[in-house]
Length: 327
Image (tube, rainbow, N blue to C red):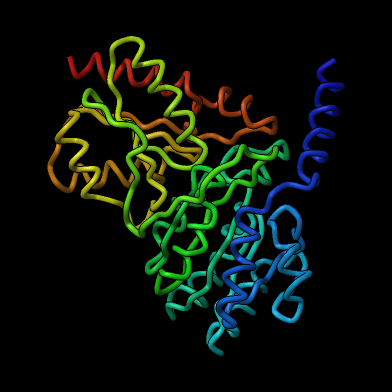
């Protein structure tokens, strides 16, 4: 029975991945490229899943599919950037970071070139399992000088990702999740480099989250509110540079903090927030929600987020623990 379910889930993944879906990121990249002739796109043989098919079709002379060769793609992008172009390089998160770290470091970050890395399938959210799951990519690139890291919480922020990448003077990593079904109508929202967005106000505690965990944090905050716990929710779309001022203000105003991320608890958003608090000598009830220093498995996104303790239920449970410590 389990084997049958696995095959059905795989078929469902394939169907969802290649149905015509709105390209909120891909459309924004094309529009930006039409306004700025320096923008070019490269892809490591993952054109539909990275929403670059429209770019390929409408701007073919500025598009290169390099094949399954992420390291080579970054090298090509380095030459393009030195020639005055702004390359956006596309693959899955696990591939564009881990397969090309030396090239990212030496051919993008060290010379501070405007190479924009765009990774899809962040964290555990894929049925394809360990080889495709990026649970350490943020930790890796946080340690690379000059590198910025941005992660949207939904398609309403995808166009803003393109703008942030262009506004950052140097290399950028965009950690993207393509919608699996057509999203409801939305108005595009803006973001600023180094700034978080307060998505819900609350005075009892603060949940700082990014990416897929923002919606889970908002759901957890609703549950907590019904129990009399008033939780602020911060969407920390700018992971590096981090909004340290908002972290410190949240610590002062709420007195307790949880971080929630679709990533290992080692070296990601939770570590970044903890570093800010430690550097300022601030002690308070604090807990990190994320993958607990282990490899994961393939499955549907809701199943995996529940299985590895990064969904609304896990966030609400952690909030209760932190509130008990707060007293």
